[in-house]
Length: 210
Image (cartoon, rainbow, N blue to C red):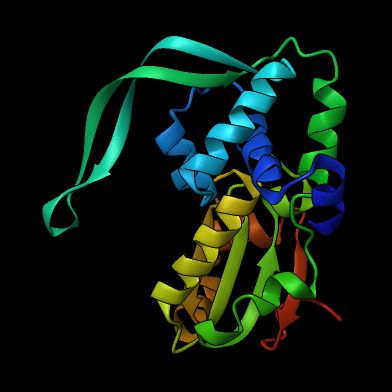
């Protein structure tokens, strides 16, 4: 991230660019962008003006879309919102090089990724796939297996990662006993992870061949 900040001028700009690059046909309102990237609205507004001036983003004055909301008792509802928003300019001449730079360097599948989950339980198996290895067709991006997993902490870490890379992360978290059962019966989700491209960052279960 430090290199990208040096190139693009701010962490906020990097996060906002990634959000639009991973969602090229989706228009976003300022409030949505601030929430998804965890950047203050004032900073978001500043970066949006710069990106519009650079012709990377296009301002849309008439946007109508369904927005998910959390209501009472955490009930998820949707509400149609109208207003001014922004969308990626897919005709921007340097779009492909920009996308390659910002997506390939989004987050690498290395030890620093696994360490983010250190306080989420006693991790036994940690596998990265999907967005972390630029395999866009993968069903799951992260697999976390361990004992006494703290799902709230895992979700918190995931939200932080999503804010950095601008894309929702598909992940699965299992207690060790549950995973071993699924592994033993050749559960389809488990096989979809293990049988396709992935990077194993931690394996205390002896799942992967040495």
